[in-house]
Image (cartoon, rainbow, N blue to C red):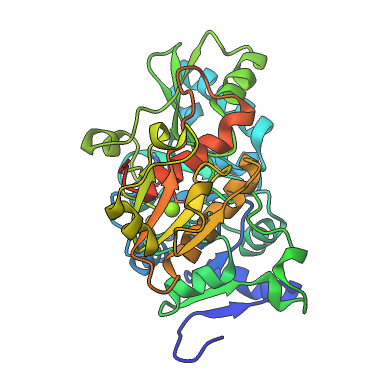
Length: 387
Ligand code: TXA
Ligand code: MG
């Protein structure tokens, strides 16, 4: 651990995981890796523990948390589908089909909550989000705690999400939190352990009934699981007549933040002004720059994708490509670490990324899920500003 910090790193030894599980059960905080990003975990059914998470993150109480469980059955108990009579039946079928198909993995499902769920977790919406992570350390810790674990991403609210133990320490060093660090177990670098290999947060899908026989699944956040895969799963379960699958509306304003809490446009921002360079400007090769822009670039960091802004390379203060060959799996795994890198470059006054254009008219295919997720995170980092 570091000098003058309250947070501390703990290892992944079986004994350390047992101790961390006991700590969670007793209402205190433990940050742990998942296949998406690092979470800041607490006992989900203990409102005091949950309020500690909101305080540590400085997160507004209007932004609900995801409950992490190992087994589908545990989530089905946290949801209240069966209590709704006949309409509960197809809702339950849909929830069973989705959990069976995508869990463990990077899909969060939001559905009507059962009465014992604390309001604070759901931000008083009456709907609770559940997810079963696939990462072995996350699963071991949930198992050791013996309780459902609420875990938002382990960053300060509005900052870049963490994908490494050190990222969590950088944001939460003054908080009373244990940070599970796989690097403490071995001498070797973290490349040995695959942590946060997806690199962006889970897809969030909300299941709700519109009448006794009709329901809707809305995508509230883009992640590795696509809307097309969700539609295919419902179709295989014989539910395509009963459920429509809807892509979320663009998260631009108040109205949307109500429908999709926590998805306001300013999110994931590095502590440096960030902008997207419009596709129009980079699409025909060399980008013409005014003298003023050239000057700005001297104090700017460029985070590229697929060499779209390669002509900025030797004009900028620093330059990194998320994936020069344009591989969206690699870009997703790198994006948050690279945003954090950009804010630590000495003299950096601005960050530029390319605007990424994805055809969102149709349902999103599996192979486009992560590029859309990266586009989404960069758009938020730049607060939607295109130049
Ligand atoms: O990949 C992930 O999901 C990570 C890891 C740690 O599992 N967790 C994560 O949590 O990203 P967080 O708190 O940073 O994002 C949770 C988001 C909320 O901002 C909101 O958009 C959505 O999930 N959400 C949670 N509960 C909801 C609810 N009851 N209704 C609608 N959306 C909800
Ligand atoms: Mg988050």
